[in-house]
Length: 607
Image 1 (spheres, rainbow, N blue to C red):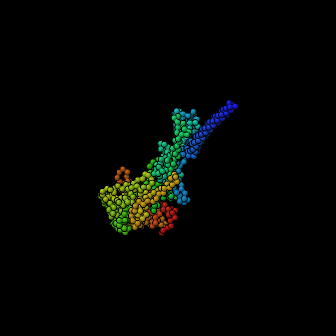
Image 2 (cartoon, one colour):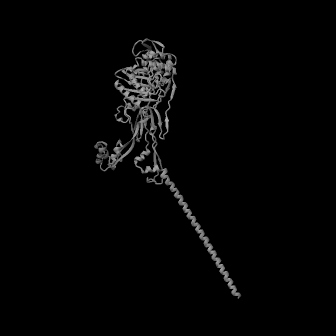
């Protein structure tokens, strides 16, 4: 019994041990499976994390392509026209205002222009291609055949430039092999006969870009031109673009618009009147300037002969590009007597009633100076000196001032230096003779001989007489509109006060007397007081001393209404053939234009 019991106990023990071993193995298997499951989960979530990061990067890259780099990929997908439109800046416009309707009108704008070129190596039949081109471009077949056939391996051969878009479209419809087209910007000048020398011209440089020459086009070339854009992509060694490589697009910045101070209606009338004046008096050329006497803003500036900036092929003499108003210096003649007299009045050396005795001539430094009429006038007042334009009277005033003080006033009125007007090139004139020893140089300068000035210097100086003694800087640009929409407005600038208000009022009364007298009567406007001065100057010989025998330059400068001036105006004719006197040539042109201005500006009669 004992043995059986022992055997049973041992069996139970072994069974219990087996169960424990089984449970241990099951626990171990459970723990192992749990560990494997945990590792699997870790690998799964790690994979999910990696995929999420990759996806996020892809989304960011895609967003960059579709949003930030949208314009760049539009360029890649666009044609040559669209690409060039983003990389080539549009040149700014030159605008003029018409106060009648308040609108701006372009004196210079842009239009599309095309160059047609050939790739002879890609043309299988030059004769047929030349015939097709000839029918559209109007170029003889024989000339085109020579271009296309003589150099069969030539990769590039220009055919013609400045072709209109409609013509290019017609050529494209023919699908001519080996024929290409390059777009560029050309200049458009809609307003003809409105002052080509003020606006200027443009030419193409070696890169095909427009560059300003003369006038506003030249002075503001940098602002008008804008800044070209750029485009670059990352490529492999074979030159192929890498899809996800670095790319960069900088779009062009268009040029600024320049708004002139010119009044469209006044400019048109000035150009028409100076043209008619040159023709009527058979002059070589003529110039008219109208300026706001309070601010120095140029309301009109025109010369004749003029040129059409849109049609430079008709220009025979490139000298016509220079603006006579700012570039051509000349001896002004008797209009300068007003400047001399203003200095004498300001220094209290003379007054309108001061007298001197005119003997008809003066002997100075071995030279004999006479009045223009060669007559003896006897006792005369300073007012009569201007009325009758007496050379000896101007010398009398210069002597009262003294040579040094007289020279100082000439400089103070702005002669001998550029005015700073925004038109290049601008001449400074020449008053260097006043530095010479001897009284003769100051004596002749007192009545406008032996020194040279420009029309814009003269009108600025007379503007000081009209503006109560304050010399204003003449300017012709009202404002600049930048590409970002911001505006830069020109403010009037006082250069200096040359004479007192009292002196300015005195010289104005004396100049009013000139217009009321015989020398300036044709400059009168019924119902208004007009102040002004005539000037008939001899023309100096080029390259030698002395003056031309039968050549004269006539000038009239004045302002109105004399008591409260609204404008100052200059009229200049070079070598009029029908009359040698300013009183009968420049003065009536002034009077006609002044009448228009007073009516146009709605200025009520003051007489």
